[in-house]
Length: 213
Image 1 (tube, rainbow, N blue to C red):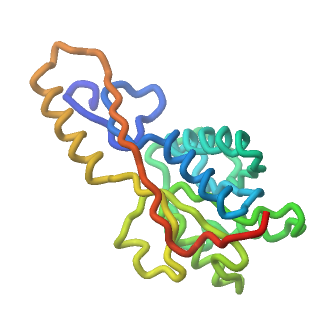
Image 2 (image 1 turned 180 degrees about the vertical axis):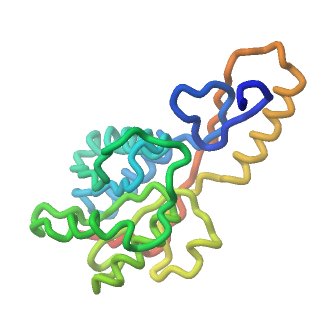
Image 3 (image 1 turned 60 degrees about the vertical axis):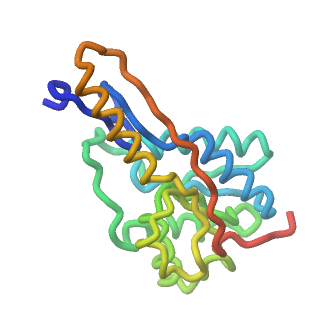
């Protein structure tokens, strides 16, 4: 049904889907995240991935791992096992208990190998991670540094310490998507899919501690 009307995918395009997409440049975002964590002295990084199969998160994990390896960082994924085929739309992470098994897996590691920082693919998940850490008597920045993606101000403005996050410039992505959709409506004969990517920027808060590497 979607293929029968002009459309533009936002942020990510599901596997096997066709059409235009307007998204953040995950490769640039992953590089910014890796370089910031490296500059802050972190050498062991976790990647929190509670929704396996999510298109953008999978792409981000791959890009971040490559940049981390270039800098000599060790990356360890903390993700749910994919026990059944991915069904779209994926369920949202809406409460700390959704993350507790992954957080406990991190906490069970010996301090010498436990990641000192966690990369989180979305601010909505970072909010739940803050709460999960608090319920375990742990503190963001002191016990685990967090770097997230999206920069959703209404979600993160109350977090203490303030969240360090990659601003994907959602308003710009939305504007470019509308422009592309209008173009697509006016050019139904052009069947070549187009991908527009917007470069993100890093917004530093206080959730990433400075360590002596």
